[in-house]
Length: 275
Image (cartoon, rainbow, N blue to C red; front, top):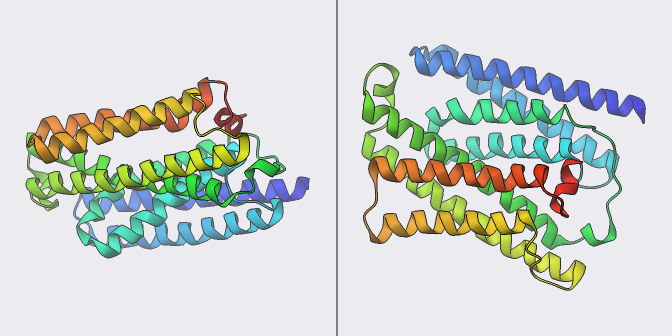
């Protein structure tokens, strides 16, 4: 068992190094118009994602449950989902390529942070053996990955609006950045909302109640309402541009507080992931 843990930690640090190298190469390529470096960054990130997938799969087989019990598993799978969703979106929407400047560092930072928690093996309780829990967790992870892309476009919009020169000229038109931020925020809101509903169904199966008002649940609802307000203002009140970008950024940080801050600072069923 000790040897398995050591191999798991070593393998994850290897993936972190690959992600870091991918981030550096990609940043050089995007910022300094070095197409070869950018391509190397994508290939390195793809290699890191493949290695990361193998590590998660082997650990899944070792512990007998998905990557959602220990904090190392939670953060590692978050990082994996960001990278996986980025490449899916890149395939579907090639214009999202520059969002790698945010997606790649987010992935390696989450994975590196996961290594500072105890990577011990945890037994899956009976109440956690539900497909609704898997849907709940999976959709929140997809939502996080989607919101990271939207966050990148909001940042790009503000930078390009202020000074459209240098590497920023390679980005899509400012109107395109604005609409991409809006659309990916919409995707994130959908996944977040359905994930929250799936979680309430799982809670009813496990404890006989749909909602318990613990801090993470409460802030998850607040986040959902904030993103709903953002989308409502954009759709019906023509909010766009700078104020919409700043409003989304505020919503994004509230989402991070909901996902990570409350689980770390509060005492609830969700905080067990980070103990």
